Image 1: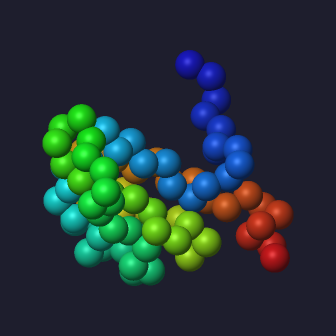
Image 2: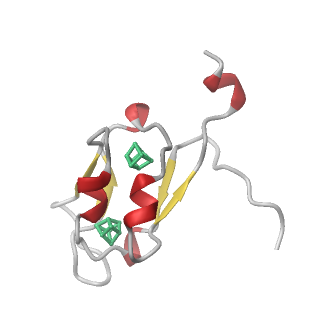
Length: 85
Ligand code: SF4
Ligand code: SF4
């Protein structure tokens, strides 16, 4: 395994939506209210998976990742140049 790198173009969250069971624990935990179930989509488990509704408002706090029982989220901190602006 090599070193893990943040995705390019950068995004604060990578969502493994195929593992999401739609429990909404993360929706309730997000202080910025930028997570919601995608009712227009059904994943392989038969659930509406969670999606990030407004990436620009996500602070990479990782509260969502801490409460998710299915390890759906990978959270990335903002690149240095973006944090300094
Ligand atoms: S990292 Fe924080 S702000 Fe971003 S979606 Fe998760 S809980 Fe919300
Ligand atoms: S806590 Fe995890 S399993 Fe539950 S809705 Fe959020 S991403 Fe899906």
